[in-house]
Length: 116
Image (cartoon, rainbow, N blue to C red):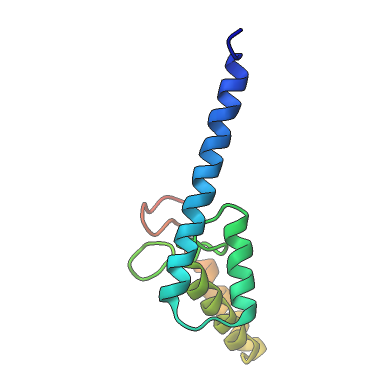
């Protein structure tokens, strides 16, 4: 008896999942070797990010670099933390000015110019 179409599709999906996980693990290993010093918290967050199926070359904040590409994970979380620290030091007037500046800009994709 031949395997059903569903079982063949499930096997193929499992192979794709395994291949994707293997690829992400290799990518993580290469990234950790080149990124430089990581704190234990950064390393833990990075590994959790990859374990959930994400690339080290993407980030959860949709932060883009000046080149128009997504910032890699570690640099994005460092940038986000730095921005949060800077914003904590702002006065209420400065925060209001910052928010006004954000409201004046249309939220558009930096690559396509399309409204987000």
